[in-house]
Length: 423
Image 1 (tube, rainbow, N blue to C red):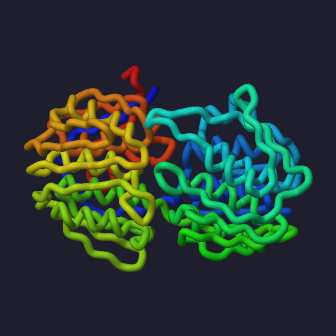
Image 2: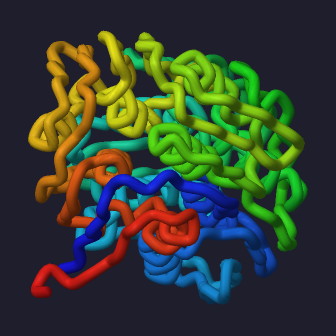
Image 3: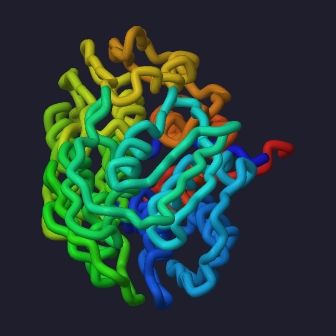
């Protein structure tokens, strides 16, 4: 099993290009099942999750080719209506196939995805939305068994849960609704850029969708969707991660091929802590060196501060003088990385969804264990500033969401390498 070794003390300098968004690529890949002709997606990241989703689509009968940074999907033979547990357990996003399966096949049997390291992530809103469209969904023996043989019909619905809107449920219902009879109105819809990108992709195939990016999305059902070519939006979380890396190392980094408008709250917090930020249409320039102001962060659905940037900021704030707080409202259990950061000398106390961070002068290298995707990124970032060489284990987590992170950081001057744990 691989690990990442990083020796701290290097200020990052240079330019880094951002890959396509994982969290947009996955629902867009499943949305391609709705087309009657092949679809080509460009700017797709080379990630394990993308390969896993390709396997899911192939299990349903579609043909999928991964080539360079493109995914070619031919849904012509999409005809199978079951995804077993052995496939779904590898990636929760497999549940995205529910909407397209009901829309195209009129039936679906998909294993429940279960929980994950950052806490329970129920799919109640997915089920609620699809039922509103006329599907009959039953939970039996760990599977969702769904039937819409009489066809889906447009409906008005609210998709708000205890933590607010749901990106997954919004995308799933939107995919099902584009081929439902009549008009669907989704209230309390997720506003994240990944939802907008999924909507733009569907529109490029002929779907009729208005309001994506707002809390109300209106969909007029159509009879068919064509094929086509589409470029996936840049990954805002990857961009944010490299911005934090540049700032916390006292570096001078340009993050290129990104969407600064998708990172406004992240940029505000970086500036608040003391980083210098400048922005043009597709580039963000960050300079660190004077991170001296403790801050308070509260994660919220978009356009609020993203939960997927919480761990990286926690890592950075561990060495910012004074006391900072991070309140996690989306996944209150998402603080597993705190124990590992404390092993490196951080002074962080997490309780009831709030992390209180007392900044220390420096961190010390240690062997640490990644628990999930963003936690693993946070530990790599901590290693960039720690004294000595940090060993980050279980890096298969980071490979789910970051394309060649060690190569990109190395190009910025970091002393970092990927090695086999047996070395």
